[in-house]
Image 1 (spheres, rainbow, N blue to C red):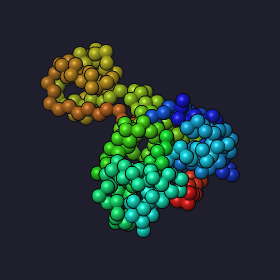
Image 2: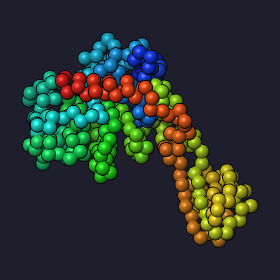
Image 3: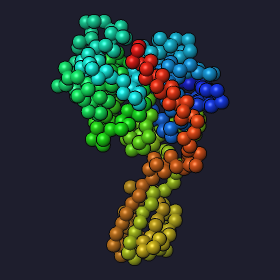
Image 4: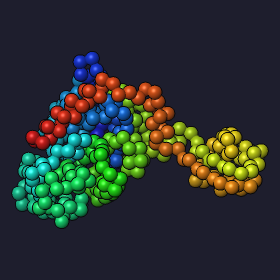
Length: 324
């Protein structure tokens, strides 16, 4: 059974269409990445799937439950980590998790052991009794992930989980996300502006812009759609021999070096270097998700009125989640 299945999901705010007919299917246990600029519809889509925002039209099944007809059943099966911090600074890490577990109606006998398990998962056991206001940004994010998992959800929504974190904290959160997938087969829906993050974590990626999904595939397949890797060579080169290689797509002279476009530099670089000439320096630039993003979204990327609508509902979602 698919963890999430949407059918022509639409959300409009007055004259602004934030989500414009999204249909997709996400299998259980997949890390699914959503890439797009601010205002593209990412947060609105997540807000609908988590029942915090009602669709204008269309529907979706989340953990087999209809978001329009069974919102409470949907919420019992999901966890959410929003962009805005929502843990209580004046409570300890343990108290934050205890409060959330009570709000979800977990049996009292299960709460203590589950809190210990979640704190260990995100490596905060030694700070269980510390006030959250003493935590770093990365520690707070890890606590929010633990809180989103305390009730054993089938699906976890992570909306910009590493936004504003330093590189070391970001890497720590990535590690916990990978461990979570491997240990619990949790389906994870991840929105991010960091291309490296999406490439590292996501099994598949959807590029969304102006409320529509414009590309959906694995990171590697998306990069293959963009084109070839680039190899820059300084020195002498047997151009005729290089051009004759079947994996070489183009050869250009760029200032003091050659710019060569090839398929799969990982597999073909050595053959290229063996083609002839006296090579002094080699630089390889592989296709990245930044290239994918620019190719498929291009100049259409704008931070327009959609961003205002998304910002409003981000705040509603955060306030709602802290009151549940």
